[in-house]
Image (tube, rainbow, N blue to C red; front, side, top):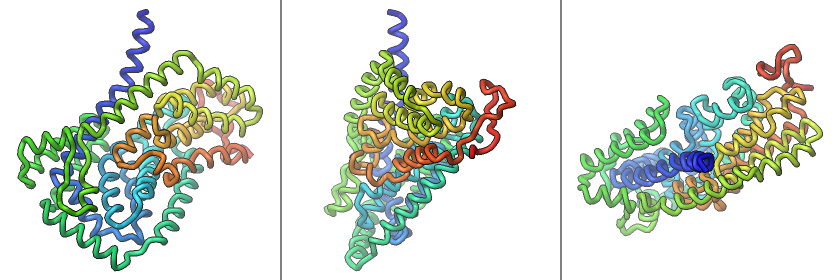
Amino acid sequence: MAKHLKWHGARNHAALPATIILIIVGILIGVWILAGVVPTLIYYGLTILSPAIFLPATLLICALTSLATGTTWGTTGTIGVALMGVGAGLGFPLPIVAGAVLSGAYFGDKMSPLSDTTNMAPALAGTDLFTHIKHMTYTTGVAIAITLVIEIVIVLQYSAGEGDVERIQSILAILDENFTINIAMILPPLIVLAVSYKRMPAIPGITLGVLAGVILAIGLQGADYSAIVGAAFSGFESATGNADVDALLSRGGMNSMMYTISLVIVAMMFGGVMERTNQLKAIAAKVLEMAKSDGSLIVSTVLTSIGANMILCDQYMAIVMGARTYAQAYRDRGLAPENLSRAVEDSATVTANLVPWNSGGAYQAATLGVATIAYLPFAFFCWLSPLITMLYGIMGWTIWKLDPDKNPETETTATSPAE
């Protein structure tokens, strides 16, 4: 009985941080809109970015932000929210904008030495951080390059016609009329990004962003206590009379995250049952029996990690499942562990947001305001990554072998790519 209680406590502990972050992000969005932070970022974005460069710029901005901070959730919850508003103002369909935001955010997160998943995957596989990152550049570089080309092709279909210009000018005028637009409004996002870069945990880091927003709401927007509490709890309700602006700004609040939180809790419970009963491990064992070549082993790793995201409903559990299930098989074949860590992160990390009931997919849908199924086709980087990794495995490209003169149980340095 004690053993069961301990295990259930571990599962609850895993779900608790995600739940708290969801609550704080909901509060942050509502407070930042009330404070004029999001309206200011949308205002400046509409004046600086044009439809001709918007999608590639969104991809690169989110990639650099996530690379510098090591957090996908922090990137989408701050810069991503603002870029969604800019994209809507420029006339882009929101699922396309969400796809560009997520593609950039997950590229930066997967390649950042500050990211928890980037540290977790090589640790479980048995290699070091920078060898892991170097090995990922072969597949990740191709995936992000293809994504950038696709975003450029899509953006060529949009042009700033006269009607679009009038619409943008109308949005700018209404934002200026209803909010104090001030350069000081960029301080809360900068604070969140700075503390993320310094490796402050997400919960206190995002909370600092909320507090900064409260100060600006009182000092520059003239908000009172009841308005702040209302925005934090129920979200901001925009009543400018302009449908475009009201749709952009009526969001946020703790209440907006309740459905997502319930989904995460139920998913974690289900994933806990699957993990405890070893059902996924039994399936993986059968798959492993069919992995007769190096390529099929890598394909099996990728598919198992994606399956774990769908069944265990958490990307960290998917990383653990993929790495632990196949670590010995890679050693038995003389494959360097960075092949395993790359296959796991190219699948488990980037596909969590593509599963609606996964904590990653639930969070991104609630934060960006777009259903997971709607943005999934446009999150090009997130589904290209596992496909490219499987192709590299099948073709034998950049598959590194263990140094035969080293102990494979302790030494993780590869000699050279296999021919």
